[in-house]
Image (cartoon, helix red, strand yellow):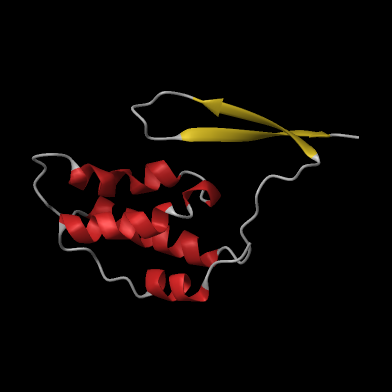
Length: 111
């Protein structure tokens, strides 16, 4: 699976968000590829915190770093891959307030 070239361009040229609506829009686009980005939640956390009810919009260095790192990671992966059928897959879903589910791929090959 490769990224849609128009999405790569959109992510690359995305300006620093200045409103909560712009943050939500960026995270919507980035979130489409979240299953391919290790640590997506950790990188996006400073941005998602801006969307909390009553949160004042303050753009910090931490938010800038997370924003730029997400952009860099999203456009640098030449090919996005899903788990291979050759491996055992264990799906572990945990209730963390609805934020994420993880998947681990076992290292043993199915013969």
